[in-house]
Image (cartoon, rainbow, N blue to C red; front, side, top):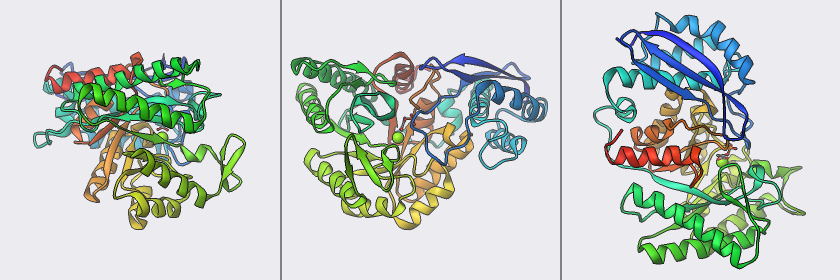
Length: 399
Ligand SMILES: C=C(OP(=O)(O)O)C(=O)O
Ligand SMILES: [Mg+2]
């Protein structure tokens, strides 16, 4: 029933206006799945390779589609993804592109779910899935590679850890976003928006910490449950010539570790992603040793959703959390394996969007299917609300 009968690939727009790969998978019993690849701006050095979409589509049509059609069952995700790997033949999807691979992998999962008449999260998570829902981390103020002339730190993220439900958590983040805008107005600071819909004001990082602190505490008082905040420092983007660049100022690795540890305590940060360069396992381990009992230290560019890099991190205690981005590694199987390895080692998985997105909502299902404690997928703006609204629907049993 789930035997694949066709795979169609095309270029569609992403939220930055760039082309990306969309895949349609059909099965012999009429099951249908459609998915599109997201795209990063602050990409990790060790990510799987995203090819220009035209090249990725041509290569996938030549190498992958003939191996999938009439041969592979969409309901067997490991078989789909192993076929994609075999068709590519490289370590990092440099032949067919991780963008083609991830679009096909996700579309096949949706086609498999469609045949079963089950929601995607149920198909992927199985009958013995837990019944937890992820807390959404919502980007409220940001800069770095996502907005010029704004903060050095890439993302200041609201984290409604005390929200009684997914829906209340999602609306709380939107309120923090709105409150941050009012505070910027009160300070006469004009703010454009960055790629993910976060405010991108021309303020210092110190000011952004203050504004976030005020915004989350105001919304916390109004709603009556705990809202913290966290960061994605995206430190690899700042690291050059052995030091971290904050505009004209620099920090050595020791200073960077001290700075992050101080901010964790001063602002009760619940989450810090990529506080150090993607090659600095040692620095990550030192910071995790210092503050890992009271905050999450998360590896994004450090681990790139790759089980080998994750295992290296586990061996040295580099972090207590991992960001999961399916397009960093190329298939859902790889993403699931990374979540599994992380949770077996007591680490929290954060299922994540990319800065370039489409209306595809697969990651909402992935977060629920894997029982991930967190999802990072923006706060407002259509391609972000596509995931947040899907999460609300899943919690409401309405997908
Ligand atoms: C979402 C992120 O940005 P990008 O997609 O640009 O890597 C991130 O760094 O976590
Ligand atoms: Mg990141």
